[in-house]
Structure formats: structure tokens, C-alpha cells
Amino acid sequence: MRFPIIFLLVIAFLVGFNPAEKKMKPEKGFPIWLKDSLHRTDQTSGITFLGYKGSEKYFLICDDIGDMFHLKLKNEKVNLEKINLGEKVKKALKNYDKWDFEEIVYDQKTNKVFLSIEGNGSNYLDEAGLFELVFKDNDVFKDEIKEIKRVELPEWKKLSEHFKPNIAFEGVAVSENRIFLGLEGTTIGELFLDSTFLYIVDKNSLKLIREIPTKELKIHTICGLYAEDDHKLFGIDRNNRNLFVIRFDETYSVKELKIYPLDLHVPGKDNLQYVSALESITMDNDKYIYTIDDPWKKFYLPPTEVLKQLNPSDAKNYKEFIPLLFKFNSNHIR
Image 1 (tube, one colour):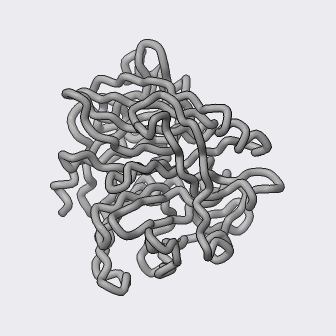
Image 2 (spheres, rainbow, N blue to C red):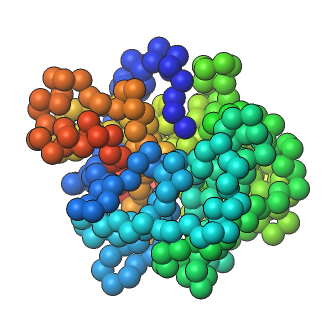
């Protein structure tokens, strides 16, 4: 989802958020561009870790223009493989105003993949939802999605009460027994407010367990979620440029909250910041966290004085609005 223009009013605040606290730095060599010699992504809004094949880490990523890729990552080398959408998928989405793919998550317990879609236009409530993706031969490493099925949540009216055009669930996570759903944010007109809603759903019955307003948690937006287990949740607050970690008690009251400001610098220049728009979060088996900058095109391009300090290829990538992949070590924040 693109930011509203009024959000410019708080850019100065965001860039200087919590200056007294040390920011969490990306791993060496990151961020990196989501492109290889043949492919690039565009408006990338979702990432989920699948596993290893040989020495390569495999991820699924999705763009909010209806594209999906396998991302193969070895050290800092990116290899992208386009995933084809089968005829059943195209038929199911043919009347959508936009194929606005947002969060994507792989459930390693069930071998299922879930996708959140935001609605746009006059039928946004009919379009938005949580969907299951069925891969060819039920193999998430195959290059074709054969079918898309809406997950029928019995309390959908409650879950979707704050949806608007281009605003729905940008955070989705699954654990052994739970589904976590994060509303991108609440708004008045084009202005994002200072809080949103987190919903916790039983994975078996699909019934709502708890609704959590985030105002007292100081979480303004939820643009990505990752569940380490049934009671520990990582998330991205895009508007505050923060990573948050929530621990729940047995009733899903918040037992502990930690917020980590993120150092979001340009590639290869850790002293130069830019206006980022982080979306989605996942974790690999080595406990590294990955999150993606879904370019906010009005402001993604750094100022001329910053571009002049970059090498020509990085400056070119910014001008072409190629998304960036960040990597952080979660062992530093446990």
C-alpha cells in the first residue's frame, strides 16, 4: 500500500525517531537489490522463508501488482524465478480492480501457503481477504500456483470492520495453533492515526480469540508479522521504522513488548539514510530476519546530494524503484 501524501508531515519525526536509543543495524552486505541478470521485482510487499535446497535459501516473495517469485539467496547473491499463476487463479481474480498481493506466509507445520490481498475500488470488501495458495503437485518449490482458495473466517465481519480501499491485513503470521492478522493501520481521510489492530485467531476452528488495539503499545502500523511460536510474535511498524516483538500470556494479553528502531541506510553507505517503507517480515532457520522495502515512489529516490555519493549502479537502481531486501540478526534482540 502506498502512503498518503499527508504522511509527509511526519517524515522529520520518523527519520529522527528515538535518537537516544541505538538502532538495530542490518547484517554486513545488506540491504541488497531484488534483481538479478534477468529479473527484477516491483512493489514487493511480501516475503516468507521456505527452506534450504543445497546451500541456497529459498523464499517466496510477492508484489502488490500481482507477481510472485521464488527468491534464491546465497550470501548476498540474488536469483529470481517467476512463478506462473494458473488459469483457475486468473479466473478467481479476473474481476478484481487490482491484484494487490500483500503479506505471504508459509506454514511449515502444514505445508500450506497463505496470501493476504487488499481490496481496491468500489468492491474492496469483496476483494480483500486471506487466501490459501495451492502449488502444482502441492510442492511450494514448483513454479506454478494451480488454485487460490479464500479462507472462510466465521467472524469476518468483525475482522474486516476497519478495512478501506487499499487497507486490509498487511501482517499475517501462522504458528502451530494460531493465525495472527495485523491491520495495516487506521485512517481519517489520507491521514494515518497512531494505532491499529492485531487479531489472534485459532488455526483449527478459525474463531477469533482476541482483538488487541495497539495504541497503548505505541505501534502505529502493522506491515508484516512473523510468529516464532504460539506466544511470540515479531512485527514491522513501517511508519515508525521499528521492529517490535510481543510475548503473550496464555490468555493472549500482552506480557512483554520490545521495540527496536531500525537503521535503514542506503546500500553500501551506512552513514546515509533514506525514506524507507518496510513491509513483511520472515525468519530463516539460522534466526536471521528479512524484511523488504516496498518503494514509496514519491519519496524512495534519495536527494541528489545522496545519489552523488552512491556508485552508479546503486543510483540507477533507486531511479528504477527496485525494492531492497534487509537482513537483521534476531539473536541480538532476544
